[in-house]
Image (cartoon, rainbow, N blue to C red; front, side):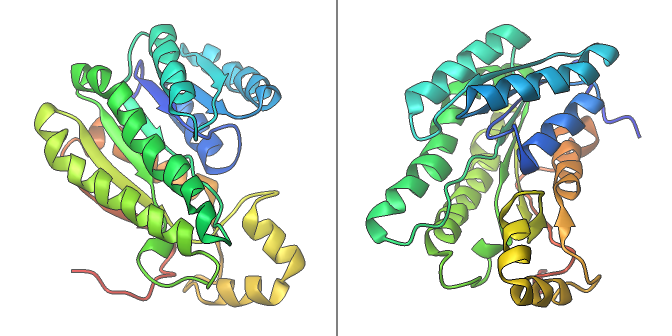
Length: 256
């Protein structure tokens, strides 16, 4: 299937590692040019170099910058410079998220990194997205749909807000030609990531979580990236306002 992504320009936040990196790689593999960001310059430089090895061979490009997602000015500056470098914005993927906070006074971190960065980032990218009839995709979580561990409260709550706001924009920005969807992963294994750490430190939790999947296995970042890439593409031109769960059946809820 031709996804129609050749020549498209995409911005992916939080994208030097893990799910964000897989999304950037998959978009580039489909012929899009991609801007990435993270808080660490060395990580950005390494990722841009590696991504350009693929991008240049198929006619695209990768660029990147350091961004503190909790600092809206920093995020806005990256969006503006990325749009200038790429020549516009067709796809905006919101992938930044704070870790679950143990103290209620620290919930402000999730507000800033999960929610305010989304709303402010989309505001900064909106005109370009509208001009290109673009796509907004936010990364949610299945933990927003059901209770998942006593320590995940701030993460789950603000991811729920991210989902609510993004799907609401399916009506607002959707009327201006911008499709707005959410992809909600379940447990995803990433080398050096949370579930890798759980596998080492608490193997009984990891094994129980694997067993709770009908297939008996936890998902990968590529599983999420494939769905994001589809939703960003012309093949999904009539998909707007959807929350697509990528969890291998981990959630036991039945939707209608």
